[in-house]
Length: 107
Image 1: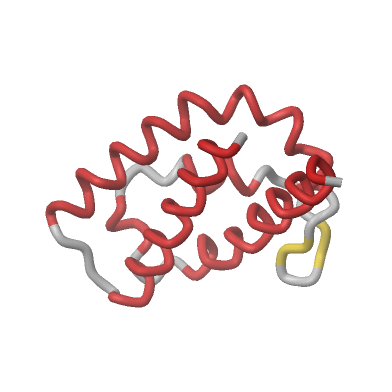
Image 2: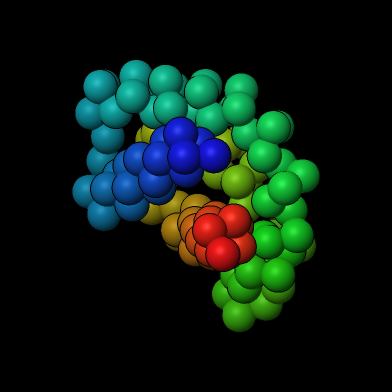
């Protein structure tokens, strides 16, 4: 779990950085492809565990109806995060799900 969370943290920071910069460099595409590949390979092992947490998380003030992790991982290129407000609104639900899982497991 620790490695998954750590890699998701890196992806989250990456998405925020790209969104704020409003542009991507060539190395950003390579970095995103690497992060996305690892998370796409390992997310299925956590998907069922995280589902109850993201289903109770809020997105735009309403309960999530779609998997925020899968939504972010479906984005094919880093450049698609430029100006992507929907992705920025999706990240907090994933973060909330991870935080709740961590808190529950550490209790």
